[in-house]
Length: 472
Image (cartoon, rainbow, N blue to C red; front, top):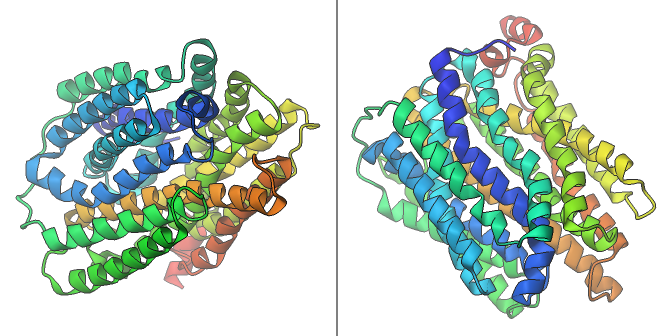
């Protein structure tokens, strides 16, 4: 794989500390959910609130990240965000109840909302269009250490120490990341941004918060159903008001002009829908292996490690795949492969040997990694430098919103199947239904990605046929 310039490579590896922490945090908590539920006196399905509360906070605060980075300096904001994330991680490990854990996860989400988007912004400001795919690869490959180490490490710590330790492992990573950012990344001089669109940010944040609250509580039996319905209605109404507002103000919180670029529009749309299915899988797999197969947290973590290993193996090959087939073909046909991998998961039962499960999950990791990286890179290839802050905020908001919806999507299918069958706890058949539900969003991305021009993102992919098609 051709290397980007050394300064870009170094920046990518350093800011990847943010992705390592976020991905490690996400993967270890999924493995530890059953133990956390027992210790905190809650149901495993209700503990999905510990995942989605973090993702909701990310989604609500990310729209602010671009403006805050421009206003106070990307490097300074990035370092503060790492500190907040680490402090909140320590609080998560000290939580004594579900309420305390959710509150700490919300604070963690605030740190993550400023941490990961600003990390991408620091990198994207250094690269040319033809370097976007390679730079994205250099950023995400170190970040995959989180999913690779997370499942086995989370299972080991849960079984041998305590589930609380899965949060404390963020602290040394944060310390190393802070030192590297302070020492090696220069402070950038951003132009002073226009006045913050307070009304737009408030409307967008409130809309996302209500929508996610409704998605998290509907069908769970935790709160009256009318509250979930009311949340959906309020979220939709506020979202409609937000769109009306940002269309008529000069410097809106949400820059809709970016959607005039087909690569940005389709990259965000297809990538967001894809994440609903992809977000369900990390939630379902550890629960399935522990509740359905009777595996320990350690064994569950070692088996689900296959997905991350597959993703890691695909990263260096992403540039080759895009050069050979182009963005459009990759996003259309690879989505089908992702859906097939979820259908294969639906066929799992305790009679399957774990090595066979490992192989299926590794294949799914390969396909999902290619889809993630391709849609991310496509979203940035045509964004002008002056609009990078706004574009990064939109992409990051969509990513976190739909990953959060993915957890809710998977939990909803699981809960509905269990309720229909009259079971108090999910059985193997319920997980099969949930995995089939996870296969639907990737299939729906195919017609969206098919709308891309043949030469979409050709400067970044180097796809020869796309170049020829663009000239014809």
